[in-house]
Structure formats: structure tokens, C-alpha cells
Image (cartoon, rainbow, N blue to C red; front, side, top):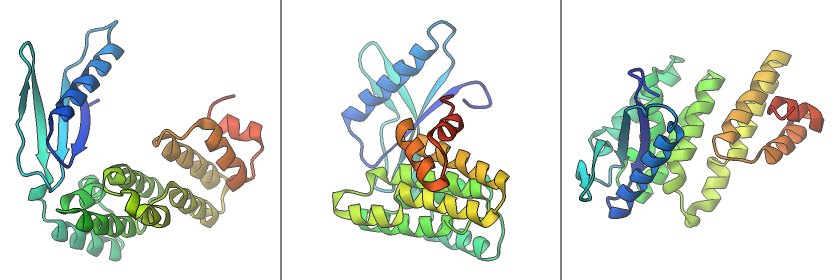
Length: 229
């Protein structure tokens, strides 16, 4: 939901093909279904193209309907410049702006070619680990994981496990909670972990198991945290 009351549907692509437009139409219909009892809001279909795409049709026409996309082409972003600037600010202990946090999340997509994208994932994760604010750090790492889904293939599964797996995100959050050494910090760490895992559609039963193992909670205590009781 945007400030003007409209609803933004956001997707990203590394190629342009017919199936994508059909997918967007399905997204739009599903959103409209959620508002079927009320007046549907203005819907904006935003597509972010990786650096592999230089241009794409703004309109998709199918006889009785016309779909207009709002497009962003990452090929115009200075990947190395963004990387160096964010790295410089983090090394000096400065906070990143919201704009810089978003640039860090999409940094891997601004490189052209799979190999450079994979290297970009590694760079982005290493930078994200240096963010002091736990909530912002989790937000960026989660974003990188989502965007990296189309970049990391079966051949790089080992890298996924070692560098950007959700287990590592969970371990990072756990370390933050231990360092804080305060009950309030521990609770915040648990809630942040739950939010992060749910963003990847991890089942509640699996999350409960993680809470029991990592935070030494009983099943009832873990269930309370995720809102089942």
C-alpha cells in the first residue's frame, strides 16, 4: 500500500517473455479479489528488470484489455559506484539511508551476467552483515535472499547454504540476541526471526521447532510467540 492509497505489485525479471505478462494479470486479479466487497484500489504493476534487460514494452495488449507496466531498468545503475559508497559509509560507522538500503538489496541484480550476479550476492551479504541496526540488517538480508532466488541455481547450491541460507540469517539474529544479553533483546530477536522465516513461507510448525532448539523454549512458549495460543 502506497502513500496515495494505491496498491503496488512488484516483481523482477531477468528476461522479457509472454508468460510474464500473463503472470502479472493473475497477480492483479488476485489482488482485486481481496477487495471484492469494497471498491478496488488503484493498482500499479511495477517490474524491476535486472541489468540483463535493456528495454521492454510498457504495454501488453490482449484485445479487450491493455496492461500498462511501470518499469525500472537496473542496467543504468553504477554497480561498482554503489558498492564502494555503501562500503565506505559502513566502514566509517555511518547509518545507511532508506534509499541506500534498497540499493544494497538489489545490488546483485545490477550486474550483467550470472557470474557477476553471484559475486554481487556475496558482496551484498558481506556489506549487510556490517549494518549495526539488527532490524535493518535482517530486512536487507531477507531482501537479498528473496532477490537472489532467481540468481542462485542448482550449481551454486553449496554457496547458497554457506553464504545466504536462512539458517545463517537465523544464526546471525541469534548472535545479536546473545550479545545484547537482555531479555527484551532476546524477545525482539525471537520476533525478528519469526518475521524473517515467515517472509519465506516457512511453516509455523517448523518455526516452532527452530524456537525450541535455538532459544530453549517449551512448545507452549514457542506457540505463544508465533500467535497460535
